[in-house]
Picture 1 (cartoon, rainbow, N blue to C red):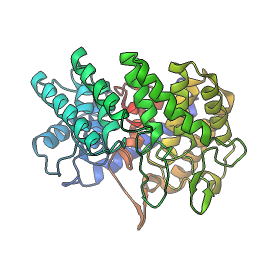
Picture 2: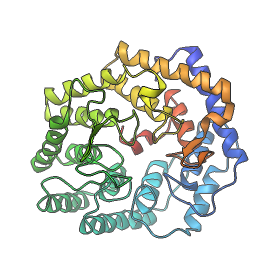
Picture 3: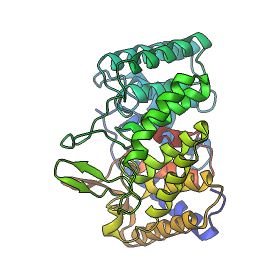
Length: 382
């Protein structure tokens, strides 16, 4: 992000150094091997640090190779914990971090296509754990041939015949209705469908995008604290600013759809919602209690930096970015590395990982400092 001041960059460099320190002094997780929540994401972070000459001998590539050689977790198709995550990483890293055998990439790509079929058959469309995460990995890879893309397109179109709106879920599962949000809901579907439309220009995909966007548009409330509040049988309640749930991610989906559908209404809703989130200033309103990407400060920082680019600069968004970096400086000065812990049910804990740990925080710092990350922020669909 080019507009950061020298002092803001220094703050982010200090946090980056703390993330490296935490990774170096915490033990690897011998069970979790995945991209989002395991050692594969840690290895990716360390390998990118070494690629950008920030550290030497970070062992990131060794960690990645060890994960690939010693898979011990239960088989999963997902981008979060399974084959699609491995394929996404290797597609991005090939030729940069290391050389990858083409036959192995072809094998993983076919595994992802098979996994996509399987998740669709199970009616499991969730981004983190289901079909749309796998679809995103396939579309992000550079190896898909025209006939393979056509087959993937057919899978999505066939699935759409059985669903007016692709099914979504909540986590936790005590909430009812359509999940509007990014981690498990239809905002992620919209963004991945936009990616599919950009590759295929298929008119039926455009109709699917609009159909899901209309759900968001009809859920939009201009005067409420959250423009897209949770609803349940007991009423409505507000949503924190976060990547996993909240107004920011929903509006990113509407913005991306507005660009391919030339829909000014979707754009205006997105812009209004983004600017309204900037009015949430104190801790009680923002409801951010930790630092990592999933529902912490750095997830918000990453999204606001992208929103700033989407809008072609915005004083309101830029001021909000500065306020977040000021919060980062205050917390980091007061709590040091403890500021980087993840807020679990049982208290705060260090995570090494991407989505809920210091590897994701470090990668966000690198992105804001304009290092080459091989589009790693696209893992979060921003």
